[in-house]
Length: 537
Image (cartoon, rainbow, N blue to C red; front, side, top):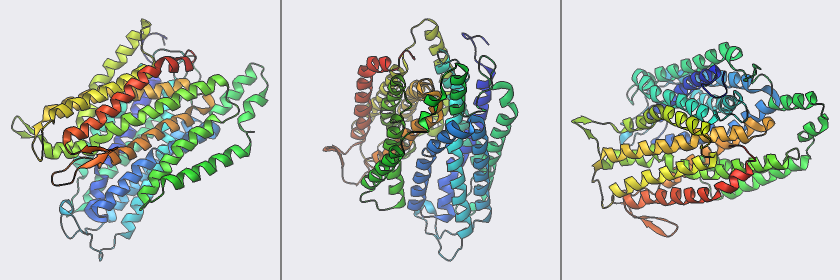
């Protein structure tokens, strides 16, 4: 396989594996809240459970990354994680098989659960399924992302393009899943058991993902030199390389010998931060948020205080940490798509599309459609610029992504200027926002995955990928908090940092200012970050 043209076949194996896994995830997620509200929980409880679930999904990659780096390797971790997730989906299927209709009235108008209906078994199966999905995702997600980069030489300029292609696989699965699972398994408050077929399809997709990976990994997942990747933990590979060069093993093993005071100190820090962030918490969901924020600070401290790290490694890890902070700004604004922008589409967008009622949920398909269409163009662009030596650095691409995010919100802020109450704007303004945000996403998200792979010390690659995904967990929580500022007719104005948020335009300007400032700051930091990367592009 040429180092300059094309991509190894292993990339497309990982593409197919991830596409099937994302079909499973998004197929279940698309109907999960509807299922809970249909028979098991009140609307408020269902949304809180959903928020805790999505937060924990991005938390467990820390555990999976650590175990893969130290003990199992990527291959075993991915297979174990996939099997656990398949079990989780089939537990969800079992939950829907035994569920009983228990709503007094339509949940969309404030459904009330009938206490005389016993759905205890269904709830327990559902929570067991969620636990399995959360744990399995922790083993699967960081390790498959790490393996994409392992297919290439450390200095191979094709990495950013490879991660963009891989990212397209994620969105192909996300695009297909709601249509398939929604088509075969949309239940209702009258017959919630019909949801079971959606969960069954999601489980079958997860099984397919693992079968594809397990049967073809030894054939295609190899380095450019033909060496199998993912079979051994990164820590063991580092030791083998050191021994092959005739180096002493003591230095390689220093990580294991680190003082226990380091671990104890980080544990104390985590507990202290948990109490600080959880101060005044009123529910389980608040404690989930507190746990995510505390670990988002503690784990980077734990890694960077590793005595085995060289000065150059610490510098490169520092770049990952700095970019991760900016990523939080991006995703907390981008993820309004599932919150405030959905509410905006329902109440303030004219959804008449040449006589057809363009349903609000269909707007969620615009992003994955744009990703599938634009990803090959971005991959080609990065490859061509790379061959000419003009490719922007990873931090510069991320800054461009933030700038595009700000432009998208500036567009919708302009469109909603003077719009009040339930007045409506053209749907094409919202379509344009999603299209621009997709370009920003392709400049930031797959490039971030590639950057983490390129900058991470080999023995910590999956763990640092887990830290990277943790920024998504913090972003999702912040996105929910920002969404509460969305102005609604008849409600008093909201306030943020002393500024009144009373109109739609005011609300969208929050993200224009936030993303715009973050983009400018990151642009200014790019020369310093490029220096800290020590030659990695």
